[in-house]
Length: 148
Ligand SMILES: [Zn+2]
Image (cartoon, rainbow, N blue to C red; front, side, top):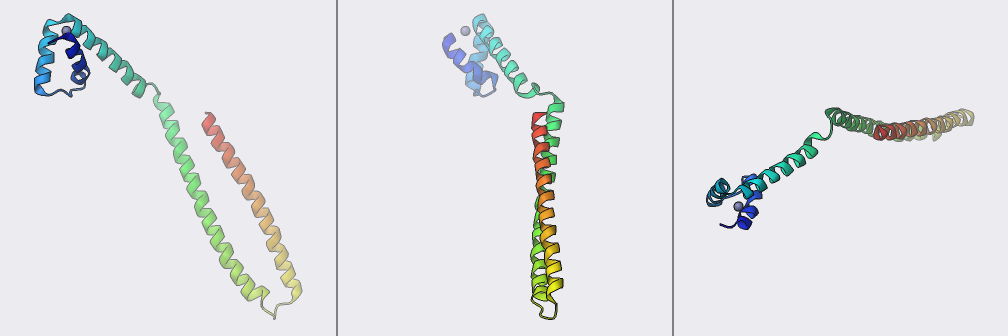
């Protein structure tokens, strides 16, 4: 068997992918051919280095902080989603009853209606303002996590 043929099989030999006959051929050849043994050693070296880069290059702390960052982001994301859903439902239901039982009730005078309306509008503006500040701070935190 020629060295060229053997060298083609060496990668498969290294990964344990040869059938019994090929394995036999390669092993027999390797026993008597220093050139191909050298080639195998070279392949092993390449594989070793590649493996190191792939799995050991990043220190453990980097992975830990990476996952912590992901977890924190998911946690906060879920928190905001549930909070938003809850707030929207509360506002819709509350608004419905408020309009139905208060604003549309002819027994309630105009001045209390104007007062409550003012409270709601003012409160909404404040809420939006606070929310915007929170979202801005959240995005900044996220940016900082990426930077780290
Ligand atoms: Zn050879």
